[in-house]
Amino acid sequence: MPPTNLPTYRPGRTGSNRRQFLQTSAAALSGLALSSCGWRLADVQSTPILKSSADKLYIYTWAGYTDEALINRFAEKTGIEVIADVFDSNEVMLARVQAGGGRAYSIIYPSDYMVAEMSGLGLLTELDHSLLGGLERLKKPFQNPAYDPGNRYSVALAWGTTGLIYNTEQIKDSIEDWTYLWENKNKLSKRMTMLSDLREVMGAALRMLGYSLNTTNANEVRKAYEKLKEIKPYLASFTTDAWRPQVLAGDLMVAMCFSSDANEVIPENDKLQYVVPKSGSSLWTDTLVIPKSAPNPEAAYKWINFMLQADVAASLVERLSFSTPSEEAFNLLAPEVRENQILFPSEEVLAKCESIAPLGKFTNIYDTFWNKLTSE
Image 1 (cartoon, rainbow, N blue to C red):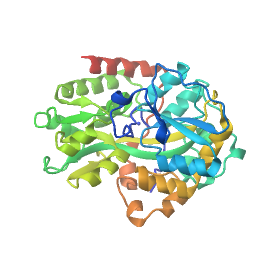
Image 2: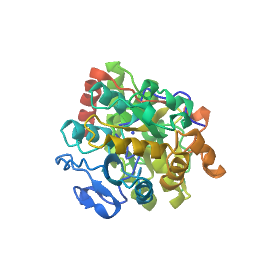
Image 3: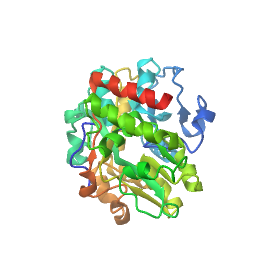
Image 4: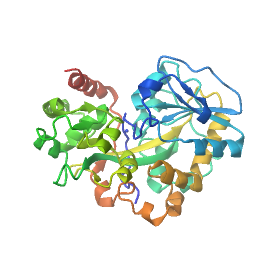
């Protein structure tokens, strides 16, 4: 079932690599064009050459959210070539757009809370719903989300949860909550990771302490920082994507991750298990938006309409391993996919989750504690 308590926000899903990098080292490939399959890795320092050609569409997306089959299918249908640059966090994406490096893109994939932030900064085009077909196919919570009432600026593409993936051969006890990491930090020392994501990591500690992911109480944020400071020496790293090969190789025993990534990795090792901690975690949504600087808005609307097609959305669930907000697409999925509790968790699990909301000026408090945590 879909979330019924949908957002004020998904992460800085910063993380997303709710989303793995292109099965390859981003550092090794940074700035290279992968033109044969329509992929490029975006460089925050560079500005893409503006292309206003009607037969080209530049998109800025999470890795793992677009593949060659999708790009080719769109090209066959519309005659438009898609060139996809990838980012690994909402904050990296926003910095690039604000620095002028996003002027080539006609479609961007921000997470829910980032839609609110970008629209507040005047960076997004208000959508013309008369040019869209398929919003009615979205599950009700995604038709009027709190982060973007009435889908004024965005269309939901994917959603999921954040939790822990662990090796049941190495960890005999069932992990039920975030507290397991602290209670077993010596056994897990340098064999566990947390996301490279301010709001997700601070949010995990806040939920463990019984607070909201979106608290604006500075004392509660400080307590979350102090708990994280306790465990930091025992972490192998803060990483959004590098945990994957390490978990599969058995070098890591447990990793904080996004449900879509867990669902993709677990078939490679049946000893792996994913859990949403009982004290609560984040519920995220990733979206499609058109920036105000879009050089090809006509193609952008064609891309959104294409992605709203039920058969396209269903194929992405099965190929790229993320949960669809489309009711019609969900009904097209094979029974075993619809019943997959990682992609489509129960209402009981979803009731524990909270969406990450924009914090306005209070973001500075989170930034201060995060910078202290990661620099110490």
